[in-house]
Length: 391
Image (cartoon, rainbow, N blue to C red; front, side):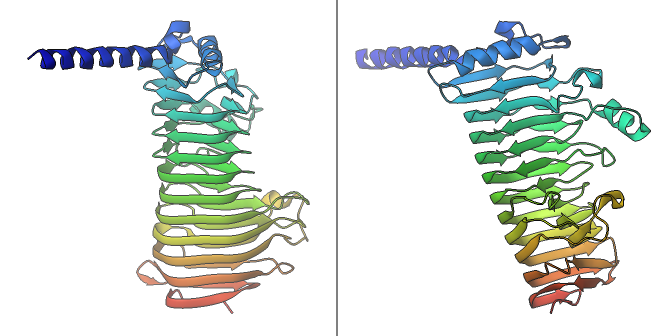
């Protein structure tokens, strides 16, 4: 009996000490003056809480409890002393006046940080008034990306919901080793430039289990992206998973080792898209794999467009210098919303090579779809619907 009592005492003592330790390593933004009332500006409270966690010698959690916290554009800058977990149980809300974010470009910016995790919660950028401004043709600010990671390493983003972004929801720029999982990104299908996730100049990014409904690309892949793995992506509405646009600049880094598997597109403008400006460049695309992809009423399920030239400005009468080689489409099935389900419009000066179509089955209104090829070569195996035009 005495041993049992002693064991219980030791257990509860350990539990209490563990709880105290956790409390000591958790910094609640309310402690620094944040108000969960959806009205009070809590920007400075968040900044002060970040300074505290960034200077902690031990691993620490910055905690955002339940409630609605209004913050303006904020910068969480490193380097910091130890590993940081940002746990969000509530909702972080942008100011009611979209001009408050002005031309900052970023609403929530993590810059030069390492070993940071952002978990849970909701970001509500309240972008509707900004989109209306853009649609009206008025003189509007550029709009802010909801959450951005610049020059960061060993980052985890999980369980986050982002709604009504002014511009892109999530931006990963100049980063290494980033894990993105179980995100929910949502903006209306007519909201301009509200990309779901934009990745550029980054290596070792993984995106899994994420649902994206937005007005622009579900995932956009910019210059300098390498070793990007994507799986279990649900896209639509939106403009699909897009590599590019590339080749806007004459000297531009290429894109390589891109994989998308076990994913679905529903009602999106595009499915699997590669696009480049019709301009000379050093950029390239190589070693891309799309596998086990389901299309449901997608306008352009498979498309390569190397004649991207918005408004015919700065590129007429030129050809794309982006070299596209080694792109595999394996087990891509479903329905196209247009008669041309597969379109390869490649550059006459840099032909697409090494394209592989394997077990592609796409139909249009329960009838045969079509494929079109320009300056593109490769191989076809297994099921081929529509009939392949590759040579």
